[in-house]
Length: 147
Image (cartoon, rainbow, N blue to C red; front, side, top):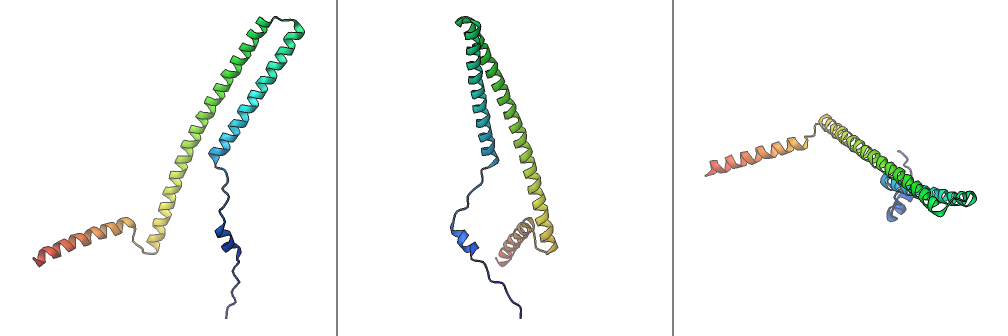
């Protein structure tokens, strides 16, 4: 007589509780982008403060200082837009690659299931559909013969 292990009750207790979902890749990327954007904004603010201090020490006029800060802001904005464009481009490439990999995995899974069904001599969905059509045709022929 074979001894059997007692089943753990942890599974049954865990079934009642909802599972905590890990953040998806998209959410992680958005969070990273928010962190980058806030870091860039903080760096820009620090740079502006340093430029103001430098202008005060050097005795540069407010008008010249404002012009310099406007140039710095414009440069920072251009770089921010360029970086955002590059990130969007890379995300599109990543999305396309993920979709291609997903389709390849789906095809591989479909092939594996088809091979397993063939090995077990279980008809495929298309074979069952063809068989259903043949049965319908035969049923119509039988109905015609009965008349």
